[in-house]
Structure formats: C-alpha cells, structure tokens
Image 1 (cartoon, each protein chain N blue to C red):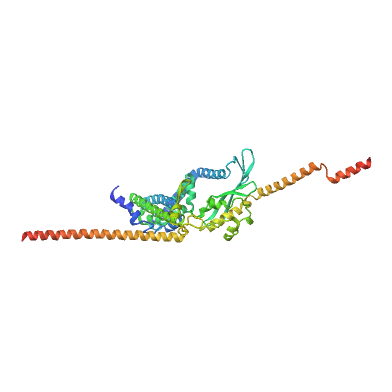
Image 2: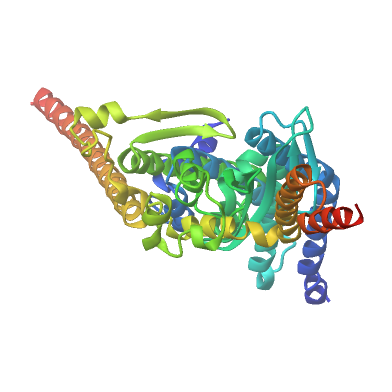
Length: 219
Length: 248
C-alpha cells in the first residue's frame, strides 16, 4: 500500500510544478508582453530619433514618419535559423530607399561575449547603406572582406553569417510592400514624364498635325 | 549563527569549491566566462536556483521515494529555473537577454543536482540552505575569477556592464605599457583566452593553484600539530626529569 502511494509522488510533484509555472506565467504574461513592446519601441526610437508615428504595415514591417508626415524609413523584424544557438531575431532599420540604416540582434541563444558581438557598433557599421539583396551580401566568410570590408567576428563565424542571412531575409518579410513601393516609384517616374510631356505638347503630335492639315484644307 | 553554520558555508567556498575542487558544472563555467559580468550574473542566478531547490528537496526528502528521487529533483530544479526565467523576462529583460541560453541550462548544471542528491536529501532545511549558500558563493567566485582572467587577457577589458548600467574598463594603457600592440598601435590581446582552449588553460591553472594552496595549508597545519605534540611531549619529559632530579 505504501509503495503504491509512493508511486503517486512524482506525478503529484510534476502537476504542482506545472500549475505553479502556468499560474506564474499567466500572472506575469501582460508584464512580459509590455516589457517586450517597450524594448521594441525603444529600439525603433533609437533607430529613428525624429520618428513620431510608427505605422504597422504587417507583423514584420513598420513605416516610420516624422512630425510633418514625411516617410523616414521602415523597421523590419527578420530572423535567421543559422545562429550558433539556433534561431536569431533581428530588428532592421531601412531608409526610404530600403537601404540598411542599422540593425540589432534581439532574441537569440548566442554565446555571450562571442556571438553577441554582432550587436557591437563596429560590426553593425559594415552593413550601413547596403541594399539587402543576396548579391550585395557575403555568401560565405571568405566573401566578408570583399562585400562588407571587414572580417567575420573571430570565434563567432556562425553568428556573423546569421546576421548576413537575417539581412538577406528582409525582402522576404516585406515582399508585398516592397513590390508596391517599387511599383509606386515606377508609376511616379512615368506620371512625371507624362505630365512634363503633356505641358510641352498639349495634344499628341500626330493628332495635332492631322488637325492642322484638316483646318488648312477647309480654308 | 554558530561555528558549525559558518563552516558549512565556508566548505562550499574553499574546501569543496564546486568548480575548482569538485570539478562540477564545468560546461557553463567554460562557456559563460568570456566576460566578467557574465560570470557574476550566472553565479548569482545559479545561487538563487540552488537555494530554492535545496530547501524544497530537503523539505520533501522524507516523502520522495528512492526509486524516483532523481526525476523528482530534476522537476523541482527545472521549475525553479523556469520561474526565475519568467521573473527575469518580466522585470529584468536586459539581464535575461544578456545571459541568454545559460539560464535554461542551469537545469542541467550538475552542482545543483549534485547538492540535491548528496546533501539536501540527507540533511535538514537550515543545513541545506547554508550548504546551498556556500556552494553558490563558491561557484560565483570561481566563475568571476575565471571570467576576469579570460577577459583581461583575451579582450583587454573588464566588463561590468549589464542592462545598460555599469561600465566597461578598457585596459589599452596596460597593453601599451607592455608593448602588446598591433601595427596600428591598438591593443593586441591574446584571443585564445576567449576561445575554449583558453578557458581550459585558465581553469587548469586555477585548479592547480588551489590544489597547491590546499596541500601547503595541510602541510603547515600538520607541522604546527607536530610541533605542538613534540612541545607537550618535551615538556612532559622535562617535568619528569625535573621531578626526578629533585627526588635525587
């Protein structure tokens, strides 16, 4: 009887632990979410000091505008699965032309003191002004010096490459909006050209010539 | 607090230091000690988990059956680690971010399981608490010393900054004084000390040092003891001779 009773001890301890952890988590979840939001906002304000409105376009992309309503750039949440400790999340700031302004590694399992050196300004600076397509980013650690002008972080090759992969995933995360933006740019160029042309030549040249000839004949 | 209680705490710090003498918890010791602050924070978080788990296991020691004691201890330890992680996420997200993967890894730290199995399961709550305190402080000191040496030699700085507070002490001046500079005149630390081989070298040397210290202390204690015995013996002989002479 005693042995039978004793066999219930482990499940009881497990259930109590589970209840304790879940109630703790339930109780502190709003606080955790608030802390995460605060951290994200702080990072975004750190990237765009003049930014006053942060408009969420989708779960990964935020449009940043200043007081006058001018677009300052975008903040994109991206990730890489090839970190030394697995998944690594990044927050990337992009300017109006979708070039990298700055970035920060947020959630990660990298080795403190080695992998975390990705967040050091000296490493981040190498990415500034880069248009984050795969062609502009290094393909391997041999390519680093050529494409970014620096070597991979000593002792943290995986983390350095994870940062590159994270930057390379920016357009994957923002595909629809990026395409719309590209279309808008082309549309702006086309419409500007058309309006200039329309000012110079109020009617198409062929029609005008034909009209002028027709008027001449009638006279 | 009496002498026994103090001895219980001191045991974990020096005589049975978990890292330098018992060689327990070497994985986090080698992995986390790249910055001084990491050593300190990892030590303190481990200390907190150790205190909680030792007290609870000591309370439950008579209820937990022998056959399932290890899984039960692991559940208790894992629960404490998870609770600590939730608290850090809620109240100190920067510290949680800085320590990263090493907080969940406290679950498999053999110091905690070792103390639960070897001490807390056989002793009362107060003794287990003091044991955890001593072991935790011993672990923190060992980690801090290793991290300090590794960072000074491997990065040429001392990081005492966490969650945006504190400072980083740059040792460029000392490196320049000893001529340890590269072609640009910048400090050139020994990077190997930040990598795993450097961790093993520092740990090995510290273990050797504490071993030497312990042997020397033992020798000097034996010497003192021997002298005391000889002195009392001589005194006894002299007194008997004196008495003998007097009788003559």
